[in-house]
Image (cartoon, rainbow, N blue to C red; front, side, top):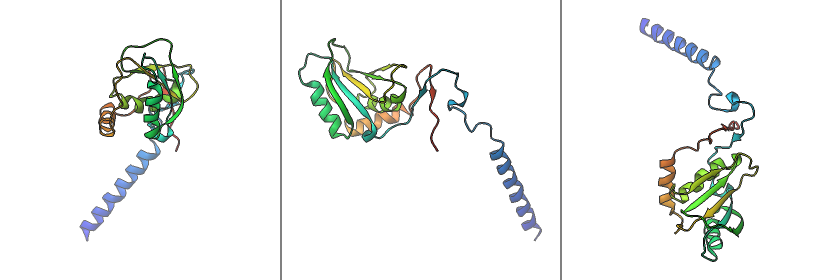
Length: 171
């Protein structure tokens, strides 16, 4: 009987400690915009589903029709392709992903489709949530689903670019 009283008393004490810790928690907003310097843009670091990602596909190579072909591939993978176009200036490398504060999570996802070899070009003044996918001369093909999943695992969670704060998560 005494053992049950001791165990019951320990359970009550543990419950009190848990309640006090939860009520007095000062880190509930840690890492969120609550501690953000005034004037810094809020970066949406939510890792979006493909169907929620808006992209513009731009061809910066001398290969005719490349933007349309890659846009079709992205559409078949359930991305929202808003427009395709040709850039006047060719770029070296595989691709450049241009995005603003609202497109951080989307650019993170798209980076995996280029096996983390795309150059990231963050523009803090950009207001939309679309990502410009600018295809370069070294582009060959998009990654397979398995390669994308592995690349996402290697990338980890999206991080806000320098000079931004993560947008608070909606509860």
